[in-house]
Length: 490
Image (cartoon, rainbow, N blue to C red):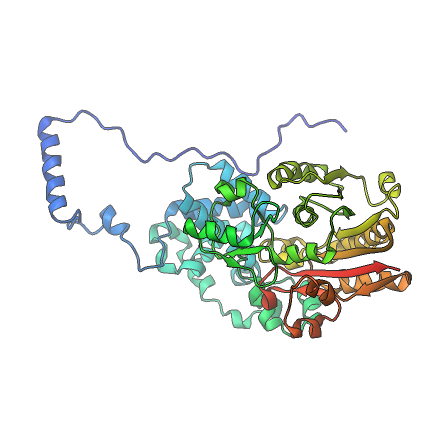
């Protein structure tokens, strides 16, 4: 197919910086002296102007502690972002990067407020769309932006001049009685996904609100370069609030999200970003020194790096993935972490001939299977609106195929861990149980035993609920939703 002669259209046009200063003409000595006298008078009064009802000082007067002022710039830029992102035809995190790149002059405060507004609109898309009906939010992005900001910060935080002709529609949307909305709208889920979750969980009243919360920032301490205590002490010396995660021995949790990539402990490879649940999946593999280990769907390599550290950078750790670009991003992370035992290899699919040559060679294999990502809605809220029943069917077939082929890599007596970041049984227990029914040479190992052998202890209710499987949920463990099954070959 020949390439189009038309250039590819950007998602966001580059923005020109707004002029904030006007060029001054010539001023007489008398005018300069008068300005100096007025400045001295204002200084004597504490730099507070008393004349006029709409001076800049009065318009921008601080609100109550904890409140923010929403400027017209924030409203305009959030509108511009939502006009593209709410079309839901691409990953929101990628589109957000393009958006902020298109306006590099935005300050940190404005960037933070706009990012929060985008995430709020995506997390609460169902209720916003229901309240705005019959108008779709992507067709009226300014109204959607105002609704998100008003719900977050209160209507009085937005200047009337920023609302303009949307005042009437905004009032109607904010007064919509959400208690009359359908159940799936109140849960902020599409109907088909709501039905699946309702059929599986009996504590959805706690699950749904937890999925709407923002996730904390979890770090994994690189045990090759530091201990958790050393990292916590260094963070405390720099005034950063942090504490140890309750389950992972190398986890650190930060309630806020500072500029981590500029920190010395990050640049030196002492920490990496990884959710606590993801850290524990590497612990379930329990890789040992000098073993031959495989991360079958390595992606960007978070669990690969965790396993490499547990192996003390010895043995051979293969990282397979079909996305060569994502694998290439692992190289700088490996160097920063000080790992020399990792071998990234791009493959065509789970039946690649290079994989077949390694059948029966590995001591341990991790399958971080492709999944719907329903456990990551706190971080990726756009996923729930971009998923469909057909996509779930497609992914489910891939999961079964990957498990079937990757299991052949494991030697007799070896271990395989099948993991997802999904909360749906169909992608988790359903896949594992179907595999075990067809392969009697494999058996399920209780995840509790594997973790307790490493002094990682959960409440007894955790295992009463999930049995021999490993499962973490936002409302139960304050992590992303993760699932894992530990299998061993006879």
